[in-house]
Image (cartoon, rainbow, N blue to C red; front, top):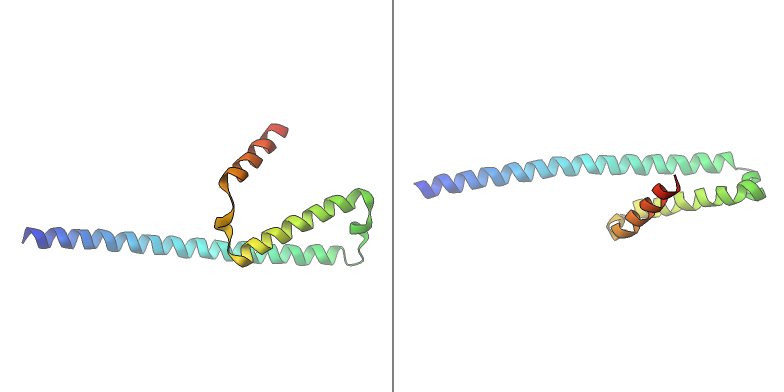
Length: 103
């Protein structure tokens, strides 16, 4: 009898954990798709803004323009491929520390 009660409690806790994790997964998945949509929208707006290629050809603005486009395309490739887990956290932390030192 006590064994059945313990088994029911363990099953209930496990079910709660699974449902909670599933809800979090749905939330993060919708966030992921929202970022993907915003990224594609930004790339579209960026290409519309430079439809004549004036920004890309300008010496002063062209370098920054190319860097922005490169970053957006890299982000798009990460989001589309779904390989966000291949990003090394130590590299991200190091880049954040370098950016904090500059400011």
